Image (cartoon, rainbow over all chains, first blue to last red; front, top):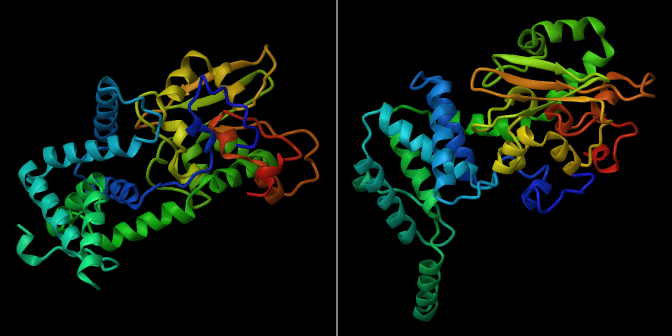
Length: 123
Length: 216
């Protein structure tokens, strides 16, 4: 922001971060890329995506998220999970199992070394 | 490593897991989709790199600068924005159905996406945090003049402010007014004046450029 005269009572401080990074954490970039690539395969129409995302944003707001833009990719991820579960044969159970597998792998991996998923946990 | 160190590290890890809940969810999703052959991990990397380093508001600035310098191009841009922008090689996701909104001494245009954050990626890159925030999405519609004031933009009271709500099908790019005193500038020099926010419509282009923007 070149002229930082934002009214703090009107717009949140994050608005001052005008040229912040496109993605604040790598997982945001991955979630973004997964969505576009899946759309390109024809798994869902972009209008379907926008509808799902805006639904998740509305849901989060109803649950008390002030929705200042910093949680945007959390809504994005929730929408992506919902669409993948709806459009592929992946199940919630598979997602949760795989998540636990990554959690265990992360606990096991020595510091400074990559976290790898052992073959036997790939269900 | 001594057992004491190990114990310490273990506790440390426990308090600060190496992967956050969100990271774990993304890793689970990504790895399952890759296993199923639904996404190609190499393509993901290329795609992310493109959006982090190659696509950004400088693309849009080139388009605007050309429209300022070349009346024929400007007419083509206003008639069929997607085709005119494609001539720069900027195309792809979220740029298929572009509409360019021309600011005039009578009308100032401002773009929002009230539902989510639809945005013309090929010309502006990915949206800034504030564009995605609920306060901007609500206030752009209810109080556009207030939003402009928040961005330090003051417009004469007789200028009409039009707010355009993007959709999944339609993306807008604002064609800001060329500032006075820029007749001698080249297209590249003009492009340097053009800020991302001026192409969303929350700022106007000034000459000379504001110090920080000139340094961008």
